[in-house]
Length: 345
Image (cartoon, rainbow, N blue to C red):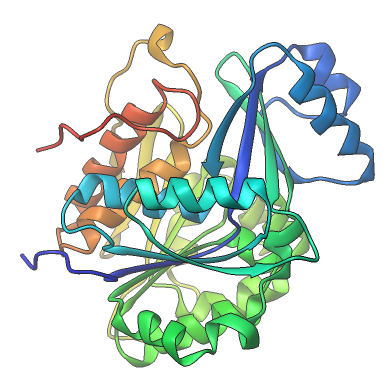
C-alpha cells in the first residue's frame, strides 16, 4: 500500500464559515425551510443570518462541503501533514482569517484565492432534532476565477501532484470550467476524479454542467434524496436506489480503463455501492439515536473517510468502512469537528 505523501489529495470548492444553531419548527416555517435540505440563500434569507446570530447558542465552524471532506481525510491520515490540498475563494476579512487558521490547524494545504469585493461566504445550519437545514450565502466563494487562480503555474503544479481529486457538486454553480480542467487532467493521466451530487437543486438546476463533467467522474457520491432527484432528472424511471446506482454507473465515460463506482449513502440505512457488475449494500456502524448530536457534515465526513483510504489504494469495501467510521464520529459532535486522533483500524 502506498504511504500518503504531500498534496496527494486535491479538493476545490466553496469555503464557508458555518453558523450553526438549534432552532424550532417556527423558525424553519418563517423562512420557508425544509427540515433536511440544502439551498442557496436568496434576498429573503438575509434576515435569517441576523436572527440566527442573535439566538442563544451559536457555534462557528469552518465549513463548505469539499473543505470538510478533505479536512476529515487529512485527520484520518494524520501524518504526513498537507496530504490534502484545497482551493477556493474567500474575502479579505475576519471570517476569511478564521477559515485560514482552521485549515492550518487541520494541516490542510489551503491555497485561497483572496479578493475584497465580496465577504467570506457563510452557511446557516439550522438544527432541529437530528435534521439540519442548510442555507448557504456563497458571497466570496462565488468569485472563484479559473484564470486568476487555478491556471497560475504554482497552483496548477499542486493539481498535477495529486493522485485523487474530489470536488462537490456545489462548485458547479461557481466555476464549471475549473472543474472540467481538473477532471480532464485526471482522466488524461488515468488518475481518480470524484464528485458528489451534493443537493437535489444541483441535478435540477445545474444539470447541464453536471452532465458535462459526468464522463470524467470515476467515483460519484450522493445520498438517497439526491440520487432520487438525479434519477428523475435523467428519466431513469425507477426509484429503486440500487437500480439508480447501476444506471448511473453505466452513463458514458471518457477513461474506459476505470469502471465508474457509484456510492449512495442513506442516513442510518445501508450504503449502496456498485462493485464491478453488482450492486452491494454496506451497513453503517450501529449508533444509539441519543448519541446523535448533529448530522450536519455526516455526508462530507463519509466522503472524507472514504478518500483517506482511497489515496492509500485500499479496496472499495475498506474505503466505505473508513467512510462509515468517520461519519459515525462526526455526528456525535456539533458541526464538522473531530477529536484529536481517529481510532480506526
